[in-house]
Image (cartoon, rainbow over the protein chains, first blue to last red):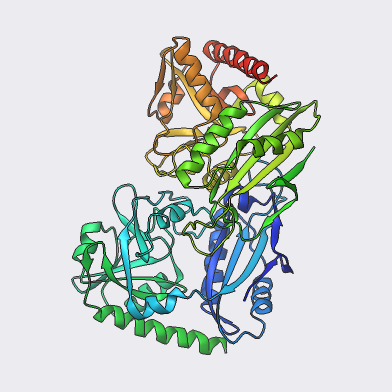
Length: 279
Length: 279
């Protein structure tokens, strides 16, 4: 199960002059798909459009992207992953963005990762990473193509560890290498503030919204490693894994999961509602 | 004057799966060429090899890169620019680097930029940029493909401004959007410390070495905007422009250039020595 569309045309190659390659000058989205349905597609496109506005990249007509996705999913009946990439395109040399740049739209279909079932069933083990998250308020929260820090952090994980927790240079916990993070501290959900760095995930937004609309206590604030260790529950989330309990972080083992399971159930209901709305 | 070699083979396209595109998972070098000669080629390849070691990317046989460059420059008799890109290559999805990744080597020939003659002759005007440099000691100094901050900073410049000076979030001056920066303060050369962020340029290294070997005073340390404004001279450097005097930064006009000219002369002599050694 694969396939790539570049600006709507089937091709496995992009221009060697593309600014996505040269500078990471672009954005991406990773979208869970069930059959022909792309989950939370409006939220993903909203986020990419917001990022494009911040970076000054012309966002394409949404229908073009939806057509790309529809064409790749075709009459699929299984779970799969769509990755969207939007770059500032090719053009004159140099960092300076030019008016004549025309965005490159890449839509890729991939197989549903096999690790996810195990993660969902058993929870995951995690460790603290040494590679820090870059602090840059200029594009904090955006899912840009500048992801070298995530690559290096993920490179620290041994084969027996599922996910790594990243901190900024000041020791503030920010996120997982490929997920956002929530801790349960004194019966309150705590998730790191991402106004200076990190990626504000679609699932993170859903969970924050779930907490707010169901009168659960939620705090978006700085938190450190010690606080994670003393939390009663810990879970990570992203668009593919949904919510996954962290069973172990370094030496600390987490046995409670009451609030994690509540969030999981509520999120599942939202996904079903999203599916019904799309149907 | 153009041409692209991907792993030694003429092609204008790279795989849409390349990690250079997906994550900025790679490095680059921009090399000034005079006829068939690539300037400071050893220093450029040394820096790229060092960066590859830090990122855990297998560095190709140097002769392959030299052959790529030789093939593109062929029997050129004019000034041109070679851009080298090295990525971790394509492979399995996800941030985690895999052993099976095989690096992608890209060698591109481009025309000598027309603005450079004017910069060298007249000096340049500069402004302070709002976009901060990302702080990440994990790959500080390396010329990685994660360059979105330079793109956004360069996007702040109007058409009447040549270069922008970037600071970190704490207000420490780091570099130009496409250059390194030197100030003359109390007859001492001062250039920002790049141990937390920024790109340590080849020309910057040459100038630091020139200062040390000719007993000029040189300080590699933190410096702020106010100190730049009170400096007697200011200049920027990179592999293409060599040394360029900053004539104006915001409202401040710099008229002195004695030390800038001395550095320029000494650098010119080094370039000639580099050319002779290669001949």
